[in-house]
Image 1 (cartoon, protein in one colour):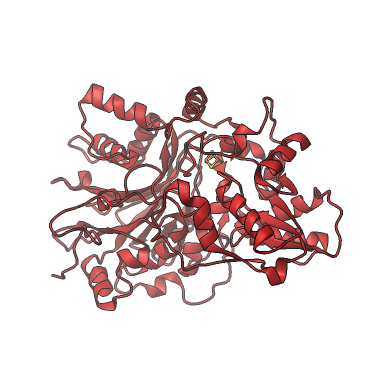
Image 2 (cartoon, rainbow, N blue to C red; image 1 turned 180 degrees about the horizontal axis):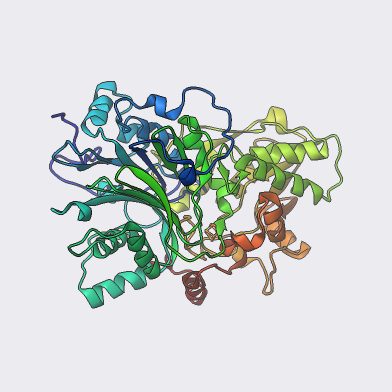
Length: 557
Ligand code: SF4
């Protein structure tokens, strides 16, 4: 038996599980609430009728299944989670299934980055984790919180133990339930539930348990169908039970990405395609909205659990959150960002001269900045450096976000002095970072002019589906756009905004351009935060509530 604790809490006082301080995002960084992944060593490679046929992309390096020894998939999971680290850095964990173990289903999780949680800088401890949690099936999770505290009780996967194998399960969740409060209150009032955590994940755990009740082993697609009828919002789930049944489900509108691939007998599922391709999978595809990949008796199948509706892809996945190496709905994140830069270049109306330079805000605006500069024949230079070593160890109240931006970025006068700088930013949410950066470029960088071009429309409303911008009062744009705003800011609005931020000029990507950049019709995108019109009933209810109490707390709390 190894000495690896199952629910270790880093730095907790001996004998106590102390909740950690909530760690607000560093400067204006937005964080996504989580990445999920699953691996299964199937009984045999699935038939072509199950997986279909598509010409696989070329593989660089060994195939994913070549990395699996003796059917044990656990060692691959931390590597996959590392590639999902951009989606959450507060906690990481996995649950594995091993039929030869007393604990047929067992969970390891901890607070911290993937490397911290899985003790990757201590090879012996890391190896002990991998050995203790070895299994033929595993679900994994990286966490960022849009609700709930940052202590180990909130780390996922959540495991619910039960003496009957199909009722003993673990799951990981990516998304946010928009009707969380209503659902929680209903369960409390009508079914006498008591909840110990402030998170929608606990509600999901009890709801899953409820739908797994009874003396017969329930069909998993029926469980998901019943669950989805109670939920409004974004929810990608990876689920594993003590019978070795697994599923990965994408909500009926497919807000968040979820990819799958099979290599030989190895099934891989991950929030982002880059995690699978780096693990050696080829022919990576999306799980369609409302569908689930199910493994039962060692065999893979796909099931639809919710009626076919239109997708509501979160456009922010391409603009900011997803890894630039990922592909979602057949559109490369890199290409989408580059196209937004080209569109900004098409709309440029400043007179350009030899003193103009393009500077990306590192790192997510780089692709857009390169494309913008190329289209206009301007040099794209790193006039702003980001200190990559100021990590998540900052515990930062929102009031100090502007100050931290100053510590995180360095303007280079050698590049900026005397120039008309076109600063390319991926998005403006609260504006604290941009305000600080523009000031630094002008004062420390000694730039002559600062023009900002934003590769995203103005954020005029909160997100209720898992992106950490959930109050109206914290946003920059709503105070400055006028009634009747149609997704294209007027010159007067842009002038007001530029004045507010002390910029020489400001331009945004327009809402109608989004679909063109993403190569997806706007009707298949969630545009809630840039239009105030949401793709689900609860999104629209919550924005109405938020408008009634503009500066109130998070609307779903
Ligand atoms: S409201 Fe905005 S951030 Fe939230 S899911 Fe929709 S597009 Fe994404």
